[in-house]
Image 1 (cartoon, rainbow, N blue to C red):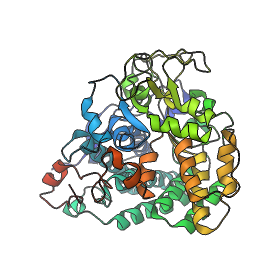
Image 2 (image 1 turned 90 degrees about the vertical axis):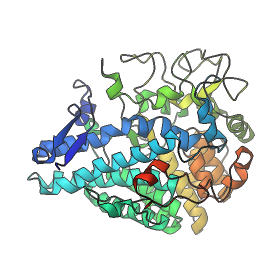
Image 3 (image 1 turned 30 degrees about the horizontal axis):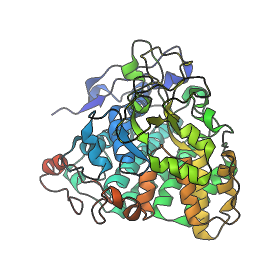
Length: 476
């Protein structure tokens, strides 16, 4: 049987130089002996790996549903009856046969396959040695990136390290083995990645991006000394800072600003919106005006902002029907929204009307912000809380940007609450509740059951396909 390389369609504007590296030809099934023969083939495979990040299963519904809806900060929203099945995730009634559980799993493994195609095949290509090492490092980083999402959702998962995968790839590893593999991939990639890249390559992995994800991985592993060391390095030696205006930070002009470590690139290509855009913002933005109106902030989140006196971040994170934004847009939306009395939306994905829409009525060209310097500061503060270091300095840098008074002797709980407010609506709260052991108490009223909901179920279809080799998570 011939082996085939499955390559997604990735079309980006030739006229926008900062997107040139993502060009890629149409989808097809290419016999392997006809591909991976040149440096150009290698570059196309790397481009496919990055372009895939915009796909529906990586940046839209399953990503937002599994990462947001079970938390106390986001609910389904939209209009009553629209996608009512999604309320199962709000109420912990989801099952092992539901489509979003499967899409999250298969989407990440498809991304891992693209990475493994690069890692497995590029070493044999005659090409520039430095570029070869960089491409393999980028793929190694990207493989770790996808496994990072899988391990948080499912626990220990099968580790597919090459293509083609053999039967042994169907066996789950332990939670510790999966985290160790992710860390190993990141540490392997870091020295081979560039420290800086030109604007024409924004969106590609750098050494600092990999260090940032490593700091986050070490936080989840509770390896606090190493976590503190890596985050110290980023803070003291990296080219990052907090962008001074929290509102402007989330507007398209500030993509790849000094606060950005990693973003998924989306852009506008006339006539090719379905290929070049991401539906991350579209699915969440103001219903009927800028998007679909899903994934809306809860009253609990609004109350948390009010309790903290945090008017700056609340105004940016939650935009209500009837608000007028700093860009002068009246938020119209809809009169009735499921789950809330006063319709509201995630303001971080709002794209002002002053931004030209060349591929449709919504702001689909907004990048997906994956990792910000504010997150690194708060990771550093949390690590310092565990190691007896300086918690106040990194924590208060974030608070001062939000016009909040510094805390003199912050507790670990202060750090957790700051993460809640700073990163609200950015798909971190649910995973933070799980890793810090707060989920059982905070989410009990929504239906969270200890001993079951710490992990999502392995998709039943995957267990069936494995012939029973894959072991299901407890309680499912």
